[in-house]
Length: 255
Image (cartoon, one colour):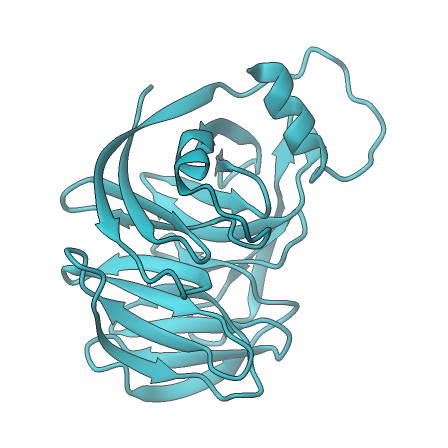
């Protein structure tokens, strides 16, 4: 299993001089499925969070991206807000009474009232928008590279940058993000794994294996990849899904 994962992750690791082989490999953690819930199979999931008893999801579509509140039990969209048609919606995070959603290439972050999804304003940010989460002090942005940006929540000015590394080498294609118990969980684009990242060092400390879920979905679309992580901190529930997946999974890490 370790050999297979090393091959898969090599595809998203930047070329770099070899490091000493003494760099420790992070443990591989399987998941146990606790529950399955319906998920909109047309939703190209870019961002996913849990807040106030419901899921909130950022869905990217050419010309019709939106942010939506979704009922867990049946996947019903309870309310939604449209992103301007020229923009492609990406990562999503909660901050205070607001939700903040990124756009892919436009450098625009939209701010929404968390209860009503009414537009409250917008801010500019640096680089591409892929994933977004928050650690209680900063918003954290991914852009598809190995770099994470820690942003001022009010202005989105960059406070610091962090390089994500796997076995001492930069790991690219960091996508959707979620803050869970002091760590950053991240999807790796086109890979059936979630990595757990130390927010101080940037090192990947665990590799969470979603291959059984990917196999269960059995998607025929190459872009229907694992993407979407949400955490219910109060009930300690972890949810994962993917782009165009018909199922959202509640999972437990078996470590």
